[in-house]
Length: 84
Image (cartoon, rainbow, N blue to C red; front, side, top):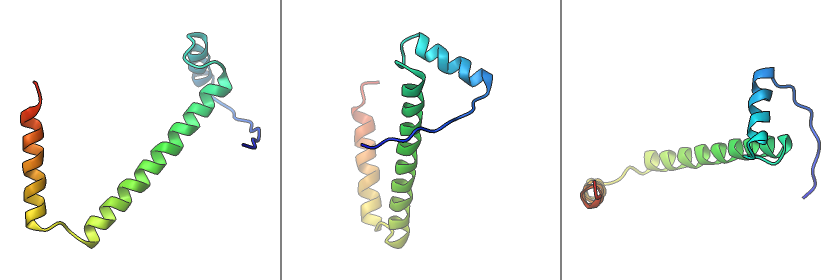
């Protein structure tokens, strides 16, 4: 995969937290931590788009009363099976 370098300015407080993460071994380098953050943002955006697509689909074709009842029954069964 081709890569490009970018420059980012961070407030001192954020840089200190970033350096702490690296110092504790959570990330190998500052760059690795920044890449992980960007990957998390990309994944969050993908999930939001997927969620929006699901909502749009249900708005276009709402569930029937029978489908809603079946979903609620399934949820009740799942909750009843929890060991709490």
